[in-house]
Image (cartoon, rainbow, N blue to C red; front, side):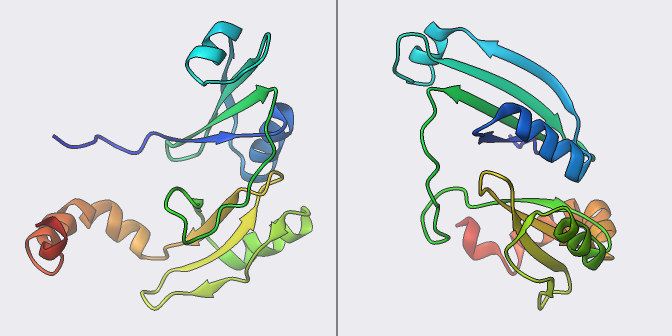
Amino acid sequence: MKARSFSHVGLTVSDFNAAVKFYSGIFGCPLVGVADTPPERVKAFFGVAGDAPTCKIGWIRVPGGGVLEIFAFEPAQPAVTIPWNRIGLTHFSFNVRNLQKWHDYLSGQGVEIVSRPERSPRGHSFFFVRDFDGNLIELMDLGYMYHVLGWLGPLGGWIFRRGMYKQYYT
């Protein structure tokens, strides 16, 4: 058994409309679906207390096929900062081209820039920003590796599982 592809990342947001505006306006990711969850399901499935808790769910499509699934709960809980070394999700990433141009664009849009663009030892470039709720987003330019991974990724995975990465599969 193996997964077919990556599907989505779920984010709880403080303001549904602000999230739609941010991700569509800044990154070109349109809202493609919305659902309002009945209070009894919000209580039972999500475990949210209250007389009539609500949850609006939206699906924001990222070019290339991924989806950001956004949740806006009422009552809401305050955000917490997630440290890098805590087990669990820390960030999500967008593949982009021309990293410096993205850095300049996002700076001009007032997006919080966490780090300057830098080049990794393996050749790709990246930097981090935060959305309006403080969620960490990595922008990554894979350069020529974008195409190499697209075409040779499955073959490389097969080879590495049997060779240099074998220790991680035992």
